[in-house]
Length: 326
Length: 295
Image (cartoon, rainbow over all chains, first blue to last red; front, side, top):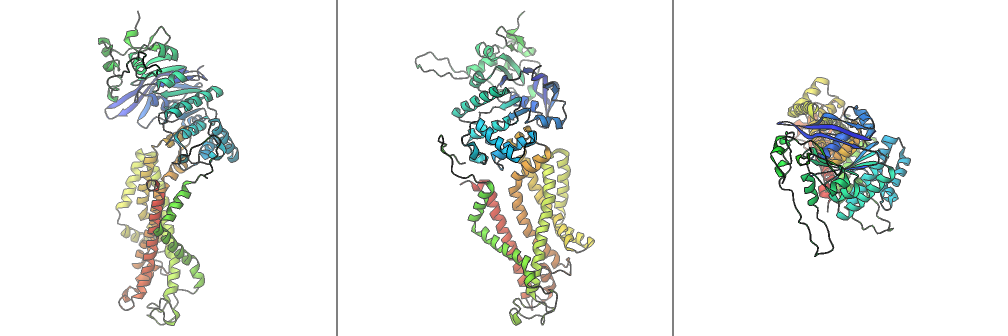
């Protein structure tokens, strides 16, 4: 049995014009200890998927159909009290903005210890001692003295390390990292990714990494789901998707990443962009390929029907009519 | 933002400072606020220990009426019934300060409860609570508290409650506004994602972050409660057996032209105390406002 399995998930946002499916018929599975990466532009439903797993959808959103099965239990139907036991304990989440995701009025040690007290029933001194160990594990120098520091006394990278320490505190089986490095310096980004990968590997924790950094995907992920407008455009093993992307959107995302080369004489591929913008919320749910308006290979069929996911030779599945084989 | 270059192995020697310590430092630099605090502590000291030095019944006649200040050793003179105004003032300080603090406490308790619930739960709860708040806000405050006191008797607890009942909407609105802002912040989402229950979210996560403007408002509320109590006593809506500053003014009002000192002394006391509280509140505002703290 998979650790996490999401089936035919549909999440609707209640808009003035009516419900808009920000997640439409999304399915994927995640095995224990593996890393799954969600990629796509802003507003594609990556974060919404994460919030749905945590049971923390905004007030206007709801799971309209489908199931999210974690360790045999459907998270969409569990009572709130049980969900609170799971959150921070069995599934924990790392947020995008380390600058604002720590509470400014408590020291980082208090905040880590609080998680341990809540879920592990540890008492004051034990919890603080464990907090120091955790800060050490996320490679914060002088963990013993930093445990009494307030968030504003730390740099962005250090705060994100604290967030990771909090996420790890209860040795969860799944960590969801929602763009954990977007707000950080490039050099720090690499460190944080390395840290996440090492810790997840050492503890056997499964990781869902939400990002739009294709480089990070190549480094970190075992499997990839490329999201576009709330639908999975392409999903499969990372090698298949990076080496032989089938969906035009995936190809576009990969072509957007500049490649560094030491030889200035070497032929360099043009850096491309994907023209156009993500379709507006109101047009989601249409029975058509939502990428059609931006696609270079668009044909009549794309406007007439939503492409199902077709199996591709390299092992992934792509939702594009061009992949249809007889 | 303290960005210290963390060399490998070089221990950071600077001791981390809590937000409270930083706020105190800011407050200390504001001379007007410190002066206000000194005056306020003096007034509270008089209220607490003064009656021990002047244990006589303040309503007792001690000398001829309308004796001017200084005569016969009565520093502030005597009033129309020959009572020592100094003793009245000292006993009155205790009442004025106590009513001020207690009314502010009532105000803050009701205001925070209503504002926090409205701001946190939104939806129907918010609608209901905010309509209730608006209802109390549009009541003419003095009239409403006069009605309460007239109906339920002019005892000090009832006066305190009346002041609290007419003053809480301001605190409720500030609290709600802060909760509306803070509940959307990422550390609240992070706390939810960590499995924190609602009660804890309200009181341990959001409220401490919403506290600064509420503290400032509460401090100013003490001042306005003292004024309010003085106003009610001036109108005679007070416990006739307890001296308070407003009551002294109210009782001596007919003789304002012949013996002006009888109303001047308590008037100045109220003015100085409320001014001191305002200065302290202002200093707290500067000290607790993160936008002014950045230098």
